[in-house]
Figure 1 (tube, rainbow, N blue to C red):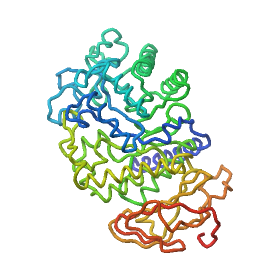
Figure 2 (figure 1 turned 120 degrees about the vertical axis):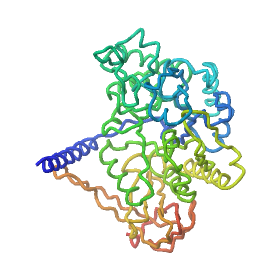
Figure 3 (figure 1 turned 90 degrees about the vertical axis):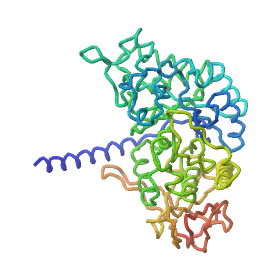
Figure 4 (figure 1 turned 30 degrees about the horizontal axis):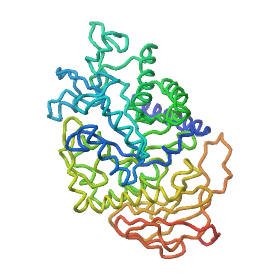
Length: 487
C-alpha cells in the first residue's frame, strides 16, 4: 500500500510540475544588460589562479583574460573568512580536504572587508578599477544563505540566525549558522551590503551562492534596489534553479552540463527551458570551484581533451553565457586543486600541449561568439531551435538565429565516426491540452554554407548529410535562399 501511495504521489507531483512549468512559460523573462548576455565569464579562484593567491596578482592577469576573449571576471568570495578552529563548525568537505585550514571562502565573518589572505580593501578596489579600464565587468560572490559562527554581527544581532532551545546556534546543511530571512533587520543589513559593494568597490553584478535557498522576494527587492542604483546595468546570477526566478529576481541560473550524452544534452535543455519564462538565460559551464575540488578524476582527465573541446563548443554556441573556470583554457587537470587551500595551477601549460592548443581554441570560440550576434542577440525559443537528426543517440544539431543570420551547429558526442542527416523541419512544441497550439512556422530555411565558420573532423556531404569523425563538429552559416529539399 505504501508503495502504491508513493507511486500515486509521484505521478501527482509530476503533473503539478508540468502545469507549473507551462504556466511559467506563459511569461517572458526579465531583460538583462547587453554586457551580460553578450559576455564570456571567467571564474577566478585566487588560491589557484596565481602562485601568490592575492588580488594584486590576479589584477596582473586581467590583460591576459582580455586577450583571451573574456569580458566578465567573476571572483569567488574574498571577504573576511571565519577563523573558528572548532571542527564542529567546519563543513565535511573542509575537513576531508586535509588542509586543516579554518578559512573557508564560503564561511564569511565580515561581508564588508577583504580577508588579509587576499590583500586589502584598496586591492579589491584597484582590481575592479583595472578591470573596468580594460573594458571588463566584475561579478562578486554573495554568500547570504549562511555565515561564519564567529561573525561579529551575530553578537550584535543574534536575531540574524536561528537558535536551538539550549541556546546554541542552529546549523544549516554545511554546519554553518543559517541566516534568518524572516527578520527584516537582516534583509536591511544585507541590502546595505550590496549597495556598499557596488558603491565602494565597483561590483557590476553578483553570483548568489545557494541562491535558490533564499526567499525569492529578497532577490526581487535586491534587484529593484540595484536597478535604481545602476540604471538597470547590474545583474544577479543564481547558483541553483527555481522555475519562476527570472521573472524579476535573477538574470540567469546556473546551466549545469548534463554529461557526454547527446540525448541528455538536448532533452534536459528542452525540459528546463519549457519550465521557465520565455527567454530565460543560463550560465553554462562544465567545471567550477566546487566540481574542481570534489570530483576525481578532474573532468579534463575523466572525459579527455577532445571531449572537453566538444563541451566548450556547446558552451560558446548554445543559448546563455559561457563560464570558464580557472585553468579550463589551458586544459588544467591538476588533482591537487582544492578551494580549501593554496594549490596554484601550472601556468607553464600555456607553452606545451594540450594547453597551447586549448588556449588557441578557446580564443577562437570567444571570437566566433563576438563576431556573430546570432549567438547572443535572442534568448529562448526564438533564438535557439533544436533540429532532429538520424543519429539522435550520438549527434545533436541546432540553429541560432536573430532575424539577420542563421548559424548551424552539429556535434558528435561519441568517439565513433557518424554519418547522419539533419532535418530542417521543426515540429510544433508539445503543449498541455488546455493551451492553444502554437501555429508559428519554425522551420529552418536556407542553404548550408559549404565553408564552415569552424569545424573539426567534420564534413558537409551535401543536401542535409554530415559526416562527423570522433568528437567532430561543424559550425556554419546558412544563406537566406530557400531550399525546399532540405526539409
